[in-house]
Image (tube, rainbow, N blue to C red; front, side, top):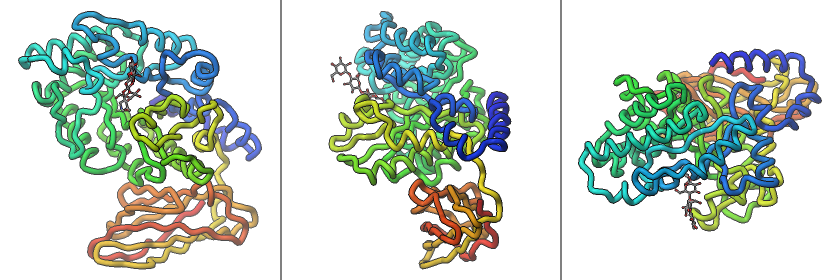
Length: 446
Ligand code: G3I
């Protein structure tokens, strides 16, 4: 937290003195430097066996946190009970240490990539609990002081937010989660301990289930430090509620992190899709930066040649920051541009018009027009307002829109950031209402 405050102070100083030209130069800095200046880390999953040549250079230069994509999973380290093979994990940890990178340990207890001796064993609750805590204790002890974050429990929930009936959930109930965290804490008291899941990025049934789970664990005194949001996203579908969702977990008193970000598209990738992907990556980065307890963002592979997507979703891909030839894609600029220090535009340079263009029982569509009333071009804009009667933004277009309570924030996308003097641009959203649907009374625009 202190680190984040210091970095924020440094950034504020930079923002006050930075001209647009130096801001552009800053965006050319490696992502890890840009992230550090904002008080967050920018990590990547890697495949240990590929850590040579250009792949290794990019991983080392651009990222300040490394997650072994597979090498720390149970099937990789303990495929036979009590026999541990650390070769793959050691290699990735050594790489990270050689390049002053943090390590996110992934993952200790998960129903997948679990050896069949565990998955198909005949267990009593006591024997399975012992097998699990032995595994956790042995692996965390092995890397004591060398792994910053552990995904202690991965993917414990079903889509509806209930406990997944994995071998652990079915045999031990929810208590396995508490026991895994306690074993990890005892083995390395300094490591930050995370629970991690997918499809929890938006506010919804599954993230509600995770929210309730974390609350229960905290109430029981379970040593949980953070919640990981995998964020395996689909082009154009960054949830509008992502920032609010991260914030509500942070408000429970835990850290949050985006742990496995990728944004897939139907192939072939076109210039238009890649530009949309750039805005989507930027929107995720903004959501993390907006939440003080968001520790950082990890991408799940940094190059399209090392992504799980094409194997698991035939016909889809191009989900990462670099193409297969290790050339940065527009998404890279989206991340860099969001992390780069920027000069805020002077206040009072734009005006806002809000029009409800259609309304029906419980729902409505609004159009918001942003007009540049200044004498120089707007290079990026953000509009804020409060919804006065409990209206909720559901889905937006032509802007990245988030809502926390009644406060709504709308930010330009890459293609409509620039508004010339006297010009205007518009975005829209569908929302929900109950009782009445009055328009907001005031807007800020900068
Ligand atoms: O190790 C074997 C190798 O011996 C064999 O020759 C080869 C043939 O296909 O398979 C290799 O195993 C593959 C393994 O990755 C290591 O490369 C598996 O088939 C493949 O299914 C496995 O995929 C991994 C996947 O988890 C499995 O669930 C991906 O690489 C990995 O990126 C992915 O990561 C998960 C996170 O851990 C949790 N969240 C979701 C995320 C994406 O699925």
